[in-house]
Image 1 (cartoon, one colour):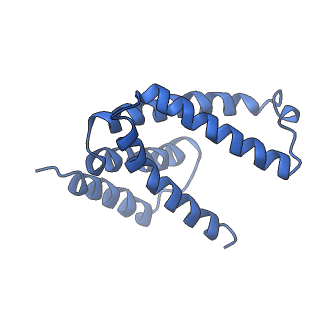
Image 2 (tube, one colour):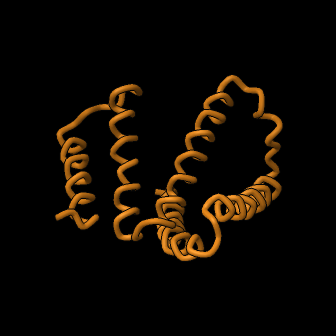
Image 3 (cartoon, rainbow, N blue to C red):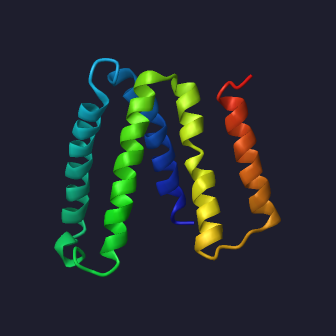
Length: 139
């Protein structure tokens, strides 16, 4: 369970992102906000690579790097859209709907990556859909 502290840090940090982004995008355009946040992200990531003596150039041309680039494109579109949504809508509605990516990722994992479809997973996916519907304030 060495991953648990990292998950907790990610949960707390990512949980703060939406309220901060919602507030800042009232004054700073979403694309500019994301650009500046990405600069911070890149500086911190570079610091981690330096601290762990990781050379990113060793991975740039690996065959699997193509997946990284495709994933980066999906990440850029997804996060930029998220910033625009947070500028225009309430955090309490935008975040649960955005959180449906968890369901989408689970379904893709099951459909295309050979992950097992279990009764528990079906229940979890259904529960997530219901939770998003209820928490987003649907009437």
